[in-house]
Length: 260
Image (tube, rainbow, N blue to C red; front, top):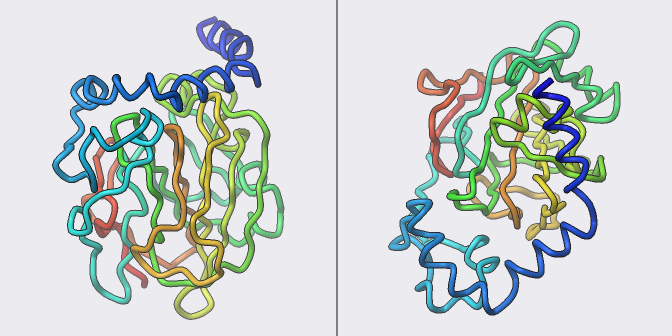
């Protein structure tokens, strides 16, 4: 019953009109007055932000803020994967033989997520990790490894919440929301899938690196609203570090996996 009510309410509010209202409010000059209280409510460390709060013209500008250069050191090592975002690890583990994985008791299929059976098959029996970005988090997206983008495409239209309630009661938002899929070749012809998932109201994935060459730690895009990143790895390609577990906070640049 709760699941049905939740889904109906979201259907009523998740439309073009509500998206436009949200974007208009957060991008307005008036919203600048909300930056300080927003920072306080969410406990944002403004000392690491690249400029003072008074230099932002709107709440939206502050939301997609950049950080001081030394604020997020990137894990060194040619075999080390670095977290692409500031986030909470929502879920991680092994992808099943039937090409599914589970988040908040909801099963997700790789075919739904990636949109193509050929790409899905590549990750059977591999590993996955889901990073959830809250409104408090730094929302720039960075490359987790050195690699070459071999394909990139967009799926989905609307975007539903990817917070705890959304993942628990929503209509499988990870595999049905608007999302941008990047498949990246690395190391010895191995691949990882890098899926940027849009959040409620706003299909807000912006690319800042349109080249095919990704260098670990460099910015590749940003979310203009809270969202999620999903990474998929081929079987026997990486090992997650011991600290990688559900519910743990992680910073961009922090090591989370090693190439096998």
